[in-house]
Image 1: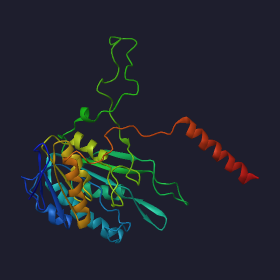
Image 2 (image 1 turned 90 degrees about the vertical axis):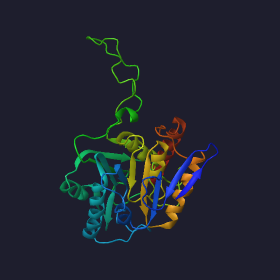
Image 3 (image 1 turned 180 degrees about the horizontal axis):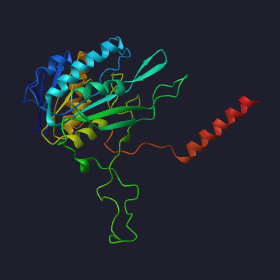
Image 4 (image 1 turned 135 degrees about the horizontal axis):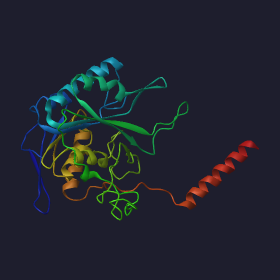
Length: 310
C-alpha cells in the first residue's frame, strides 16, 4: 500500500488491490477481477461511465449482443457489492453504427430491471460542446440511470441543492403570506444537469478521450452516500470518481485496463492531497459570452447568409 502525506500531515492510503483499510483502490486490469475482490454489500454507490462500444483506444469493438453480455456480467457484480440502501448510477451515451444511434440506456435498462433494481431517475446530462454531425442533429447530452436496490435508500437532497431562480420570492397571500416560497437552502437540481464536458480547454483535461467531469460525480457522491462510505467505479479511467470521493471524505475503488490511466489517476490524487489539482468548482455557473460577443456573432452570421444569397 502506498501512503501519500502532505505538508499538513494528512495521509492518503492507495492500494493496488481491494483493501478495506485503504482510502483509494486503483486496480490495473479487468474490472471483473477487482469487483470479485470486493465483499458483498460494500459500496454505498457504484457509479461509472462504461465503454460505449464505439472503438475508443481502451475498448475492442464487438457486436452489440456481445457488448450487452459484457455489461451484464459487470452489472451483476455491481449489484452484489452494493449495500441494500445503496445506489448504482450508469452514465451512458449512444452507440453509433453506420450513422444510426442506439441509446445505450434503453438497451441496458432491462438488465437492471431483471436484477430487481428500481429506477429513480433518468438524469439528462447536457453539455455545450461535442462532435458536429452532418446527417443528424449534433448530440449534446448523455444519460445517467440512477437505480436503487430498495425503497429505503440514501438521498441527501440538501447537500446538492442549487440556487433558487428567485431566492427572495415570498407568498403574497394566504396563511404563509410574507414567508419565503422557496427552500432557503436552494432548489432541487432537477433531472436535467448542465455541466461542461471535459474538452481541450477544461482545467481537468488529461489524455483520456472520454473523461468524466469531477463535478458530475460530486453531485452523485454528495446526494447518494454518507461520509466514510465506499464509492466504486468499475471503469475508473483517470480517477475522477476517486477524486470526487476523496474531496468529500468518502473512500473509492476502481479499475482500468490501461496502466497509463491508473498512473495519471495516482498523479491527480497526489496533486489533490497537496491542494494543487486544478478542478472546475462544483456549481460554478456556465460561461455565457457577453452581449457584445453575441451581437458580433449574429452580425457575422447575417453577413454570411447575405453573401450566400448574392
